[in-house]
Length: 398
Ligand SMILES: *Cc1c(COP(=O)(O)O)cnc(C)c1O
Image 1 (cartoon, protein in one colour):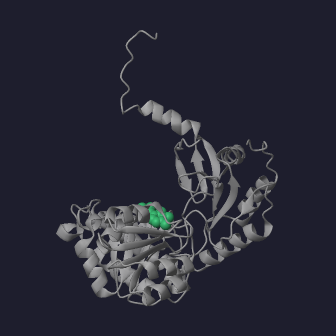
Image 2 (image 1 turned 45 degrees about the horizontal axis):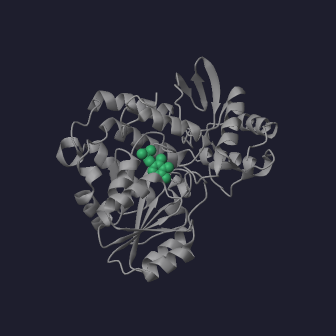
């Protein structure tokens, strides 16, 4: 074979790329869900108990929301037809924005069709060349991508470390300083030191953008979110949250003072150059806000389930419970292989608890990410905790 002319290697060998992904045990596969019924999912004819959704309040199939969707579809049809700055901004969107602002106690809100593009657009609208973005080491991918798109200098501060952030802000000569952080960290469930961060923003003439994807609906009075939970109020604060998680629907919003939101509407490219979410989605979200505010038993149920995990979980040797007090409860394992093995063993017993691996989390910190929902019965969680306590896994290699 040596004498045969070798085919010139192409830069586009996807099969080789995929083999690399397989070798690192990082191949992701989708499961096709045939039916959703709260936390019970039907997959390939099997009913699975799901601990992997972000439907923290159990609203994704709430009858009031489903009715609102039917009614809204007959009134508005299904497509928004254009971007919000052309003819895609309906009365439904407008009312929703007013209600979102009121819900979180801020002067004005701007609604986006999804959270990822919201942050990927907001950060570049706020910071550019000559500015600096200060980003928590464990922030969500969309904040990181937003920072990269902005062309501002990126300063990654140690996770939840206000002292490190303070030093970096002090040392920075950037014209504008923007601090960005998850409020509740998506893979660890812990909460950022929001009061300290806001105080730093005020002290250093910086702006603080918080992403409350996992706090909105869950934390704060009536589910108003992390900013309300910690009574944060300041023109330095921009509050962003997503609406596909606890709110059970889709989309996201950013709230802040009137002029900041007007500016963001003028400058956020992912807002300006994207088709608006369907009006029916906006109507369903309005129904969702009512339910979030009124059905406080859902937050109480969630607190009860969180306490069960914190107080009753018995973990296999070498595993560790995170410090989270929220609906995201990571069971830290370490190796990708052991995390996958645990996921598979639980799957065989009818539980779907996802293994989270790098690059979603730092190398060596693979985990099971348990997400709890008000739709879980305490008995269902008790059975899962029993199955976890009884797991017998091969000793991890290496
Ligand atoms: C899920 C998530 C997003 C993305 O929101 P989508 O509406 O799903 O696009 C953004 N930030 C955080 C922290 C998230 O967990």
